[in-house]
Amino acid sequence: NLKQHAVIVFLVKKDLKAIEIHSEMVNVLGESAPSKTMVCKWALKFQRGRTSIEDDPCSGPPKSASTPEFIEQIHIIVSEDSSVTTHEIAHII
Image (cartoon, one colour):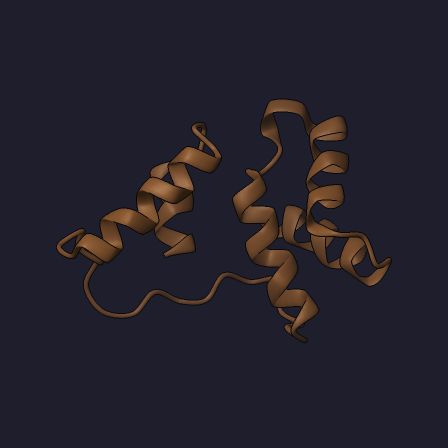
């Protein structure tokens, strides 16, 4: 969501940590707030100098959970945030 990305980049520029940004977004947006994993992902991108709030275009065919490493990544994401959606997982991985 571009609006959420804009909020994240703004709060990163105010030197808030990703966990603080997520907490603020949950306080304001409630259940509509992005997951902690997504906030951390985008905060890291902006901390590393990213300026665009647009999602990167997807290239190639969808990824397949055909390796143990890929399955483990998904397991970690879901164990950190059980409400994460498949769309969010796809963007994280």
